Image: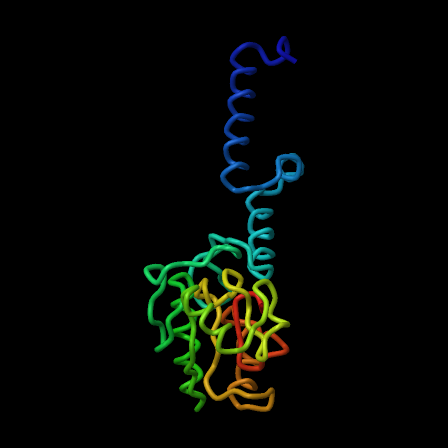
Length: 202
């Protein structure tokens, strides 16, 4: 191959592979899958976009831009401080989903549905809530009078969940509206709690 390409050709080939390795590293595309796409004339970035869209629903970190549609801005397992949150549509949430929440609240309001509720909460507030809800263990929500996630495991601690006011069951107008439109703003319901909506349904 070296004889066929010559020294300049080998250098160009090596440089191209080097740049490709940097590219797939930045895009987080598996090397073999990216190389296969490249040799088939496809753009490896399409693989990155596919992986990214899958990560959104699974609740893993994503670099998706803001706008209407599913987004997530914080890794599971990493509660965030208040400084990482903002008030959006009257609800405190992680800044990565603020635009979606603002649009969701505005669109619901135009449809005659008022969305209010609690979003981000600190780990200290989560601990106090578990105490209030009679939790008798530290690592499960099943030991609580009202199911309440263990400290450090709530989507509220990440600013990625909202408990909507006044929603007690699945027949409530807010639930019905969210059931129809929530996913378009990146929100999914926890089936056991009609009021609880988050970026991954947990």
